[in-house]
Image (cartoon, rainbow, N blue to C red; front, side):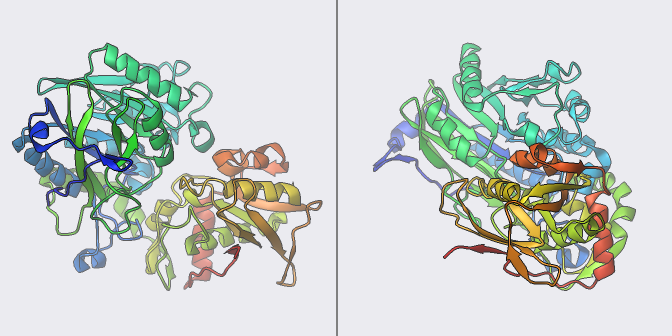
Length: 538
């Protein structure tokens, strides 16, 4: 399927599109094919983001996967080339983490697939640091394309430092195209880069990177970012010299054709250089491919921009070589996947866990609370972004659980005052607009919040489950025992209050995925539900 729907950028009421004759004579005609937040989903996924089962394959209800992506890229490269376009293939980060391919291979599967597909550049995502700099260094050392980030200083990690560049300039088709990478500065709070890697402020770093790419001869400069859509729009407006922003991190689907799209493709932003800068992102989990067509002058000014991010559907062709590669990489995973640990009466998705109460979050939080009761816990807190896939209805395997909880986090307990619990919940509610992963999935308490209020003022009321099964208002002066995961307890996702105000913290409990596996095995069959523990104020 060709990405043919065109969308001309506009600034205010006036269309920016150049006349057809000018577009036809544009000195540079460029196509950018792009992915982001693949999260190790090399095999097809179901609508919940979990690995597709045989019966779902037979029903034709599966999407994406690396073999479909590779075939789509071959077709799009040929189509763009036939139109006389220069073609680049870019990835905006977070290839790591999210399936058993990463759990077992620790980045080696991603490297092999990326090299087979033939990317031109990749930016560093926060999840590339989930198992520390040595794993990323091993991946980067044999990656066939440049690994980019202008705001990472890895001089404290000598094995990694020379493998991350701020930018690259690609000479192709008589043009010189600069690609500047950028990584969210929140990475130390949401991943594990360690003390030897520092992250600079994004806007300034991108500005410096664009200037350096221009000085190195780039006529066109594209920002390849892993910072989220909101910051991408700010960057496009603030940094001179940009021609486009190709982003990731917020898992935003910008599309003119795919169901569930959150905005138009491309999204126009009035740029610092006085012309519209297109911003694009293509969902997540290897389900979509983006194609951005740019007509530009020799200074990199966009004369016209069009394209789409389209779903890689069940009927789309597969690339036989990449399909065989994925099958080989999957061989060690079969036994792990096959072990059934329990059953669900209904499937659950993680799609809304970053924005509100979700049935999957309730299941995991209840499992955490049950495990924490031995230590006196009465409240459980799990970040919605830590739930990385959905679960199917019917039998649930150990592989399914690892796809949901792939981080090997441990159960952590601490005591907090009621006032500090309020502060923690306010933090969790503060990043909803950006799709931040900190939204609080809870057990043992209920709360009401007001989404339209300013961050820090959204929590309306909180009540805590009593021993009798009812609920009583949270007491700001009382100490409560809370169970969470060690990532949040150590301040991840901006939960600094769990780090700085914790009393008697203990971070070395059992692994969260093992806690959930045992809970599901004991409780099966389980009927998932949302029960109103999180409510929006009227």
